[in-house]
Length: 309
Image 1 (cartoon, rainbow, N blue to C red):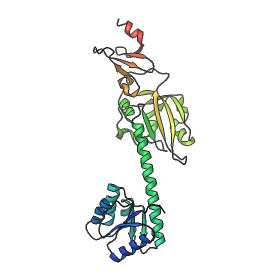
Image 2 (cartoon, rainbow, N blue to C red):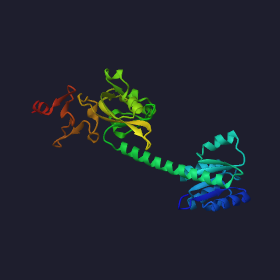
Image 3 (cartoon, rainbow, N blue to C red):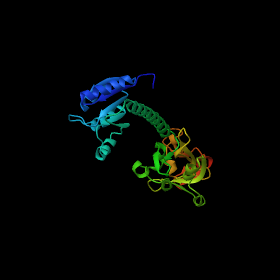
């Protein structure tokens, strides 16, 4: 039991049953914030009293049933729900699942069963909040990286890509998320004989570096030659739940004109106006060469300027 008394809201339209549940909760060391008979009153009470958990009778009198009220409470206030019911048919069970309940109790129930269900639900909710926090931090961190980044699940299906990847390739979420990584990150002819780096990382739980890969853009001319750093995404227990790919400009291949269209915020080729004269050229910070747009080739800096001197 937590040192701080968890606060519980009881939503039950049978006054005698509500009083019995309330007494059982107090006897077990919980603080009852309120007992209300309807879904409408439950929403108001949650807003005013911020309980840690709601015990919700599925069948309630009034316009707002128990399942509908639970859906609103969880979606608006992120308060876990345990359903109470005197009978539980398969149809009702399927409807109740839409509210994402943290438990079910069949009336009549024993005090120890009530206590166990509440403790399990509270612990599960705290774990989910921590996981959501880590996911939000992870997603925010990846979105703001200057390098193109992708993430997959354990099946090698793309679940995420950041702004840098979108900017360089022209990807749209509907065309990429949910697709196989092999369709968007391809390897050279020699490397195709071996396992895709994402498959190896997921299966072996290792990190690796893969050269000579290609990001396939959404439009012609938007493909990118890249090197990949691939690492497993793991839980605290060391279970691999996916892979993250960080793309780097190819170390042994000169950038194409398509990469030159990206801005300097990504670390790829950038447009430069050295004296603000309106004469703009594209400079690759990796190979230190300038794009000759007439020939679509990359030239050494001195060659580029000598030809225009």
